[in-house]
Each structure stands twice: as C-alpha cells, then as structure tokens.
Amino acid sequence: MQNMGSPEKLIRQIMQDNSVDRETAIMLALRSTEAALRVEGEFTEKKVQQILMDLLLTDSRNRTPWFVTFCESFNRKSLPGWVKLVDEATERGQDPVTRISVTQNVIMSIAKEHVELVRLHKEGKSIEEITKASFAFDDDKSDAELCELMAQQITF
Image 1 (cartoon, rainbow, N blue to C red):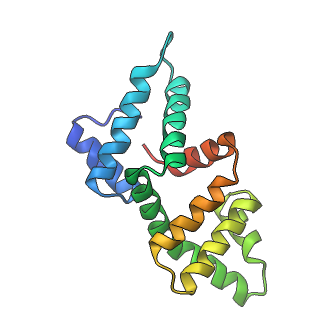
Image 2: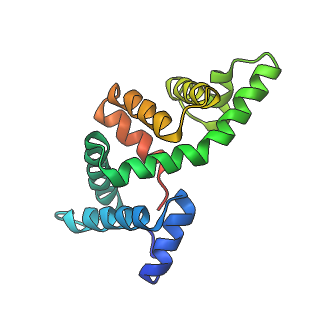
Image 3: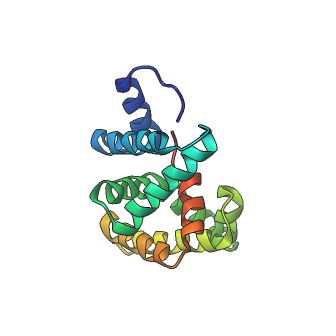
C-alpha cells in the first residue's frame, strides 16, 4: 500500500481506483493495515502483500458482505470492456476467449470465465447473479490461483 497522505485521501483513491463505495474502500484499507500489522520479523512489501492476499482469500471464501460488494463493483466496472471485446471478436470471426486473453493479459481459463460472464450479462442477469457465477468459478481455483488473480485485480 503506497503512502497516500491523509486517510481521507487514501479512501478516495481506493474508491476511484477500484470503483467501490466508501465503506468497501474503508474495509480494503483496513485489511491492508491489518496485513501490515501482522508482519513478523523484517517488514517487507512482499510480506505485507502475502498476508493481505491471505486475508482477502478468507474474505472471498467466506463471501463476506464487503468482499461481495467489492466483486460486484469489479464486475460492474469490467463488464462493458469485456462485452466490447467479445462483440468485436465475434464481428471479426475471432475467438472471443483468445481476444480477451491477449488484450487483457489473462490466462485462457480466466478469459473463458469472462466470456461466460458476458453471456450471462447479455441474457439479462443482474450484477448479483453475475458475481455469484464468478464466485462459483473461484470455488474451482486453488488458494494460490485465487490469490494471484486477486493480486492482479486489486489496486492500492
């Protein structure tokens, strides 16, 4: 977590970077602070990040309300871009999974999940239903895979 000055500035920056509400930004900041406080021995950014990912993994697996809200915000923010990529790929006769993988720099299995979330969106599913589906995908991932994915998606 970078030094942002005042707590209010930090919260506003987290809100902006992650497209989340104030309460969700506060919870993310609290988790970051908790991770820093839990470092034993030499204090390094890598140790903080590992502890933070462990805390977020627990929140994800337990579907804590703030983390569900965070994921809904992430999906709400990301879906328009994914829809555009899927539509462009389809119009050009390209594979949408490959297109998302290459342009978003994600592995094919994650790109496939994004295409599935786009399908649900186009079927008129709510953001809550789409997020529930994304959690179902996460249930099939190992803890290490899920931590790596979260590290790529969360901005501090």
